[in-house]
Every structure is written in structure tokens, then in C-alpha cells.
Length: 460
Image (tube, rainbow, N blue to C red; front, side, top):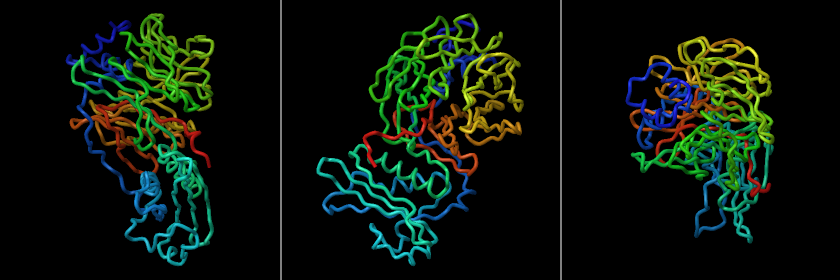
């Protein structure tokens, strides 16, 4: 029962009294299938906000973009999307429109003396239709104290790409004012479940903007879909599907929606994780009888075994330098995080606080791990400082899973479930901000943040 369990076996465990080892298998060996059972349809969860960092947020004035037609409204509000993005970062406090001293759309209309009184940087712009059916989007960012333009670009894009333009503009503003890369143009992947019975259940892999909007379905199935993982180029996803009745790993192209099977060995095929250069996948396979970590070269399908232990080893995650992996193992008696060289050898335990630490993922700079920390039946997202060895709990909800860092490391995306339903939420470890994303379409789980993306349909 420990080593070769079919999907039906996992589902039968749900109503039973689950032992600690079985719970580990259930929650993490098969990518936390329990979250498909827990919770109901999507609802607004209570995500307790932290507001202390808002006190130091910088005021910024984002003027509604000019629009030449009085008879029609613009397809989207570029300024509103930018404002919401910057507010979620915790670093900026957009000034409400009712408090603005004017609504300029060109530099000539800007009276810098008025804006200096607010102590705010200023963003203006305009949106206009083009003869070819696309739209022209222009924006400018001003330092009102020096009366100096800090950034200014013009984009051309179809209507369906206007939200992405707004995210890109936010990235530019964020970088100019903070010196750090923005991650608003990145996308997220996640899985939803609809239906209440085995006959009506349907699982869908989605890709959406970083704020949860503009979601598109990439792959649907009547069997569970699990563990979406982005390729470093942001063009492909690896994931696990049970559509054949067994777990197989697929690679899916986002734009063309083509896919191919990459791992279909006897036993468990799960937990895919891309190497930083995109040439390899780390996987959990039980083809030799026990769940171990392997690395596959994608083009040749060559496998190398990384771990050799009688315990369950699963959920690999690559270090940013590509030289080591962290993974979850119960070799100490409880689920804990270990680190091992990609060439194999002895694994080093890195978590020591608590009896349950799993699903770890590296921060982009490699200095920290986001993970799921369990304590007396409560599972929360935590941050482990690898140098100091200190563990800090970041969330206040009770059934959190699948932490994923934004490309710039400023925010951690995760899924959470309570008696009201399930949701995607995000937390900023350094700035003390939590917020819930807008996601529609049933129970939601297993989020993954993409590398920063940019649509070729948008031309600066």
C-alpha cells in the first residue's frame, strides 16, 4: 500500500481516519489531492490583511487616460489597472480621483506646482483607436519636484491585449521608482475543479494575468490535473494528468495548445519541476519501487536518479543556480525539506522547526524557501531563511498550499481553503501585504507564477 497506490486508493482514504504517513502521501505525494475534496465552490475567503507597510507607501497620481470619443467608453481603464497593481505592491498609495487637482493628459496641461503639494509622482497618458483596428497607448511618468519625465512609451496593441499593456506600463513605473524589476506582466497558472459527483467533475488548467483576470482554459479533463510548472521561457507548462487512470506527466505549449507526454513509467509519475535553463525536468518517479527524485533531459529523455532512500522523496524544486534541489521527504519520520546536489549524494535536512514542512520552492535569489508549514492540523505558508535557519509564518489562514514566488521575489502566491470555499491569495513577506485574487470557475488550487512574460502582439 505504501508504494503502489492507484488514484482510487487515494480517494478512498478521504473519509477514513488518516495516519500521519498516509496524510503525507495524500497531501503531497499526489500533489495534495485533499484540496480537491475540501472546500466548496469559490467564495470570498477571509484573507486577513496586514496594513502596517501601507503607512510608508509613496503617493502616486495616476490620471485617467485620455480618450478621444465622447460617444463610447474605452475598452478598458488603463489607469485603474495600473493603480490596482501598484496598490497591491504595498509600496504605493494611488491618490483617489476625487482628490486630484486636475486631469491632465498632456505635459502642457500639467501644472507641476499643484502636484508638488500632493508630494506625488504623476502618470498621464492617452488611448486612441488606430485605422488597422488596434489601439495606440501612450504614457508618461513625471517627477513633479524636478519637473522631469522619468519614463515615456507608446504601445500599439489589439483590444484583447490592452490589459497586458497596462501591466507592462506598471512594470516600467515600478522599476523606475523602486530600482527593482516589476512582475505585473507575469502570468499565473492554476487548476480549478467543478462538479459535485465523480460523473460531473471536471478539472481545468488555466492561465491568467498576474491579477487573476483574463483567464483562459488550457486543458480540461474529467480526471484530476495536478502540479502545473512553468518552463523558464514562459511558453510551456509541465503538469500531471490522471486522464488515463494513472499519473502521467505532460508538457503543454501555451499558445498553440499542443502537448506531448514526457513521463509515463510504471507507478507514480509526478511533481515536475523545470531546471533554470529549461533543458531538464526534475520528477518524482516510483518506477523502481519507491518514490525517488529523478532528473530527465527533455530532448533525449535520459534519466538520472538523484535520491536513493527507503523513505518517500517528492516535490523537487531547483535552486536558481541549477546545482541543487530541495525536496520533501519523510526519512526523518515526519515530512521535512532536504537539499541535495543534482549529481546525487547525501541529502542535507534544512527544516527543523515543527513536525510538518513540505512543498518548498526557492526565492529567485536562492536565499530563502517558501513552504507549507503544518502545526496541529493547521497548514500555513512560511518563509525559511537558509542562512539564518529561521522560519517565519506568513499567513493566518488554515489550509494553505502551493506557494510560488513572483519572478522578482516580492510576493508569494498560494491557494487556501476554508469552510467558505477556496481562493488564490498572495502575501508580501517584506512589506506585510496580503490580498485575494479574482478567480472564477469552481474550487481553485495549485497556483504557479510564470517568469515575466510579454506578448509579441504588443509593440512599443
